[in-house]
Image (cartoon, rainbow, N blue to C red; front, side, top):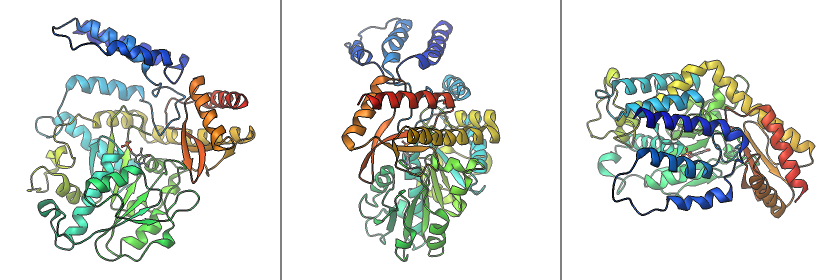
Length: 449
Ligand SMILES: *Cc1c(COP(=O)(O)O)cnc(C)c1O
């Protein structure tokens, strides 16, 4: 066992140490070589060391260097070394962290992490929270708590009686809501399209003046950090309209919520603490390994009512908080361990620095690409940059060229009708020199298109 695990660590360290010198996208030959995995199911046991060797030799080259310094696709963080180390140790522990009593170590670490998270994200200290797989499931949790609460207020128990015959719920969302919000609404029986969609401005922010008057059970889905532009809905204004009318305000802040951890960008989160529930990711901007998302709910009992495995969701003794009473899963890995490691080792200042650094790097990208003659389509308020290289066809060619060239990786999007390269600065490992090197590569590729 010791040899095998040491071999795995050695191989993993080698992988990370050589990331900087390889193409960010896997070579086509490495992808083609994946057919080596396509063996018949072995009939007999084999040498575990041989299995690990095959995994590394065939698997490692076929990965995208998302853990590296110049991957700017989607919104994807790397893994802080301490979080990967904690992940290895917690993997060895193999704790099924659904219940407190059998797994006090990991369950307690999650409680501490949740308290620290509420502090750093400037959310009410009395919120309930849950470690889930990502912001998609965090949105699901927040909206499930919302569904419980708005129906409970009109005397309907949705967990017991379902939605058939229930008073209707009005769901208000921005025209630029993330598809994971629509998906969650669909899963919850509220309907992906049975919503009141509010028009947005040129940055994708909900036009609050276009919100209808609110009456009856209502859920408003706001957004902190548009996945294309990084823009924020005016959460304070939305809450001012919605909450006195009895509506529940849920915020999808998958990466944007982390602006609250900084001095310079916290203003984007004005009024955030007035909402009722929030979804965010730790595997994006906190740079912990996949997968880790977070749901926070102002009224912990609403989350517990929606998620507890038994209907007798008595308030749990705070010393014995069963994680499974707050999550869709029963059995689950101890996601909070990596979060705890990140927060403890970076501290408030280290986290602020990481977020600010990425925001500054987004501006650096925008300034240099503007100077090179390209068009930035968004106000760079956070960590997202949208770049047009001309018409859709040419922009597409540049993006494909950049991905094939391998210095960095950026994806494609269509923003309000215009095809754009989307750059997301989300990694702890990215340096200003990486930005400069990436810009040089992009300019070089664009010159050849
Ligand atoms: C990434 C993202 C999500 C989905 O998060 P997952 O972790 O992929 O489930 C939801 N909303 C926004 C704004 C996002 O950026």
